[in-house]
Image 1: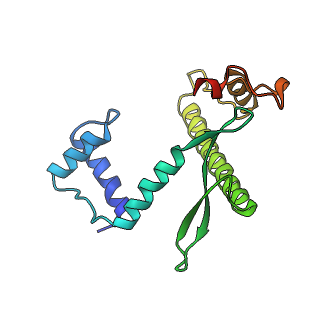
Image 2: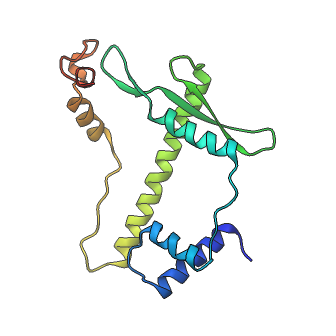
Amino acid sequence: MGTYKENMLAIWEKYCKEVSSEPADLRELGNWAIKKKLWAPKPVDVSASFARDMADILREQVRVDKDGREYRAFIPAKSTSKDGAPLFKWADIDLAPRTHVEKGVQNERRQIANDCFALAMKVEHYNASHPREEPLQIPFNFEEDIEEMKIARGLDDDDKGEPPSGGAAAAA
């Protein structure tokens, strides 16, 4: 018997062979795996379940500052528990110590960079595997995207210090 991840991948492969290799709805795949007795839910760790739910709720909370900038109200920062396991500590961004916010921002930037790297590898693989097709192009400079989002929310740099007249604060 392999690791949990190896067993899950084996279920995927079995589903592709026995049912379909077309793009799959994972809920349908799950129902199939349960019916075939290939998978059963793990016992619930109540405190971990609470932590996941709370993290989801905290991640969704937004505020609007005096300049009309909408921002996430809470920020996680990754650390290590006493037993060496990864641990995320959450704080209100307006009350958190600078060290917590710096760590949280660095963690989020690293996560974005990792996602961009994974996307680049995916695109490069696809392009190499389909040489007769026009290559997919994916720019990773997001400055224009961010600027467009600011303008759409009435936060363009021309009005620094001036609250927007019809931006995110007025729409809220």
